[in-house]
Amino acid sequence: MFTIQTIRKDFPALAQKVYGKPLIYFDNAATTQKPTPVTAVVNEMHNLTNGNIHRAFHYLGNICTERYEEARETVRAFLNAPSTEEIVFTAGTTAAINTVAFSFGERFVRTNDEIVLTEAEHHSNIVPWQLLCERKGAVLKVLPINDDGSLPVEKLHQFLSKKTKLLCITQASNVLGVINPVKDIVATAHAHGVPVLVDGAQGAAHGGIDVQDTNCDFYVFSGHKLYAPTGTGVLYGKQKLLNEMPPYQSGGEMIASVTFEQTTYAGLPLKFEAGTPNFTGVCGLKKAIDYVQELGWTLVKKQEEKLVRHAMQRLQEIDGLHIYGTTMPKTSLVSFNIDGIHPTDAAQLLDKMGIAARSGHLCADPLMHRFKIQGMLRFSFSFYNTTEEIDAAVAALKKIKQMLH
Ligand code: PLP
Image 1 (cartoon, rainbow, N blue to C red):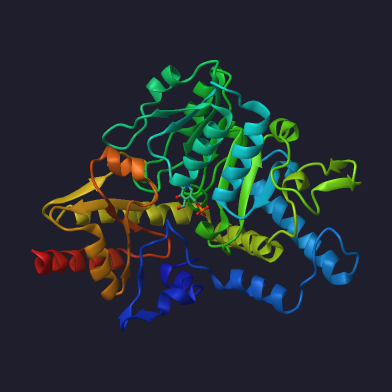
Image 2: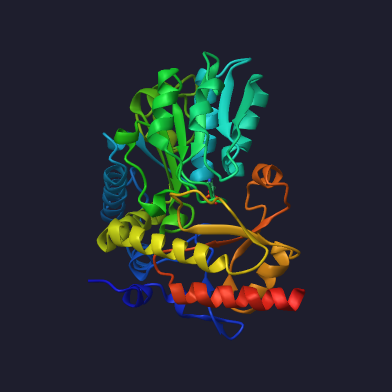
């Protein structure tokens, strides 16, 4: 029913030229382009249907409240969460992790307790836990990864003990692309009585997760990596935990009653949604999820798998090119280096050829130290990319190699 060429028509950004060259957009792990049905919803709400939610009893306020709560139901169904009370809207993955780090930390973490992470985490799933450990006198423990980028799940139990309060793992690494066996990891952690937060920033756009099947305790993701507006994101948390956790930010909407002597809080999920939320963005997020579901996750996954396999194969034609994260399954990204070429020099030259790639530490400094390098080049694909674009990028890299050597 859909072809890549017809799908691309929904993404006007892909049809533009940069420096006079057709844009090849390979930075989808950083943020994805937005389809017109999503921008249409946001524009329509900004132009016409704009009323603050959950407080006004006028026409526009009521419509926006209804749409916002419909979006919550769409996200609930996307994650197969038992209840919409467990779906908190945030500004993104980082905001969601900080919410848990503060709120869960206040309630459950004490001196000498431990938080366990893996070596493959994004800075957003490291620094909030470091700050928590500093505040509480707790200890951060890090599970190293294997050379191929996989996690040694069989060693995880050595890192878990009665002192462990939370395990925080990425669903898929934004550097290596490697998809972690979340269900097994959660089962191992639960066997030690340890709850698990899954960073879904690199998982949501590739199908998300079934939170009941995996049984994770928290799942977080960003809308802008899932074809939705920036400034949107989701924190899923098990009701029992969210109920026990204190509010993170405070202000309007998260209260039940306020006097100068005492404030009581709203129930879930509003307890964690202080102030006016990004309700237009959230309605865009709903449209983005509907859009991808209409294409079908089967099509999305098939196309993205084809792209990553093609890229891995074609890139290996280049002498001196090293790929990081060689194990499967992988999301649709490839990070690599070419001997003697600084990744940022290559990225700048690619840019002038119309190819948007990412370079540098990729917000994962510890992984750069792990591989004893300063940075990498990364191509990350979406279902709207093509094998022809990959061929053009490989040809561009070959040219750059000649130029720089
Ligand atoms: N976690 C991972 C694995 C990511 O890839 C990213 C962003 O690239 C983040 C967290 C942070 O996401 P955001 O900047 O949207 O909050």
